[in-house]
Image (spheres, rainbow, N blue to C red):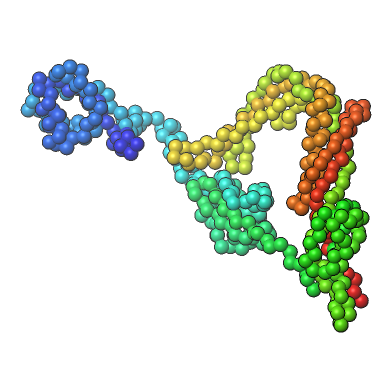
Length: 395
């Protein structure tokens, strides 16, 4: 690749050499350090090769004492191209202007790449940077890392470290999120453990305090499970922070409505394609009407950034909007599919409600049609930790 670029810059010529002793020409090139390549033999006395412009001049001088005939077939490269364009002033001015714009655009930020964020949305990070003046079109060399970090971290409470590295016209934002420790439990505060809901106790783990229930006990919501009032012996009653886990079998009954009527899009109709250019934050539209999406149609937007060879990103993006009209139609869903969707939704909702401390052990479903809706009911048995800590009011 490097040799091709070098040969293009200095220019190259294609020569046809004819001689009774062609090996002498090859020896002359070796003796005078004349570079040559792409050698093709046409017959025993004639062959073609490529060399540089300077190599051609040197070879012609060296071959004057031989019977060789050297004929130029073509010449290529930057010098030849510049000679052909020497009188095309408008084209040369446009190339010079384009080169100037490309060089100047590298000193500005035209794109952002955010990495390292999992819980903090990318939009929140970019909005915080924009408040500090780091946005599309701002000078990349003017970014003060230390000052920017100190101000942005005040806006982003869940970010512990941030860096903006500008490479060309792309700003690479590296983020390290803050991992907060779990809240500390105030163990000096006297507390009881009570039942969060009704259930049948299967296991009691009293870490501190006195267990008030045992395995096999039926409890109701709000019932005392682990007491923070213990016997202090000769010191009387003692108040402690009751802690522990009480596992129990619990039962849930939940319902949801699933629509049976659906609005579907029919066959594809007329397709309209609009083009636009995004230059930084400005959009140049090549269509007269607005971009409001008509009803009953598909809209697919494709963004194609302009990138030069080598990965240099330009501040220009081609936007292609393709609208395909469709005829809306109504249909009715299959009862079995609607029932399965309702069951999956109910299981998901209950799993989210139980969290990590609970599991679903058994489920039963029933369904009934109500007009254009399907009522799906679930009765579930679960195993979960029902104990919650509540403080004891002390005088």
